[in-house]
Length: 171
Image (cartoon, rainbow, N blue to C red):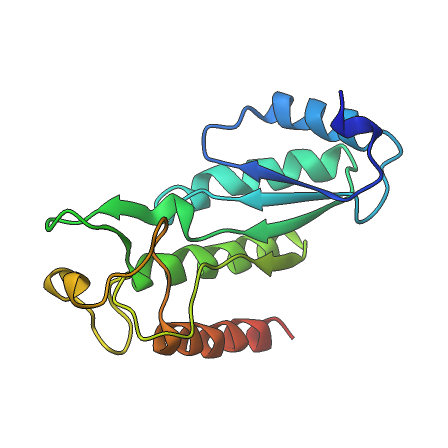
């Protein structure tokens, strides 16, 4: 109720367990005038669930003519605890979720509006994989996060180039 009275844009985290009717109700409540730019839906599905969970959401939102911006958060749905006990993410699953996000939007004729990352310019070892091939035993060497594991400088640049390729494929 409080948020429906604000003029600010609002972001809503959308996980794989979201009930589509609840999401539609939230969209109607928070954006009764259906203004462009008011609502951002931030999907956090995980690479293993995005293919089945996102397409019906997009279809239902479009069928109901809700104006939303779609953003992918490939970080949170792909977090797990490694065998060595570190909270981590794997570069490959982050990339996989992004690739599916783009492919689904391309198939639905909608716009993949953005991507959320947790990253740093430092050479940390908090996320596995990437060109450096960081493995589970490497995590302890430069694991510095106080909360969520971040892509390091090289992983961030590598992902930026891979996303550029995805954007080029669309045009």
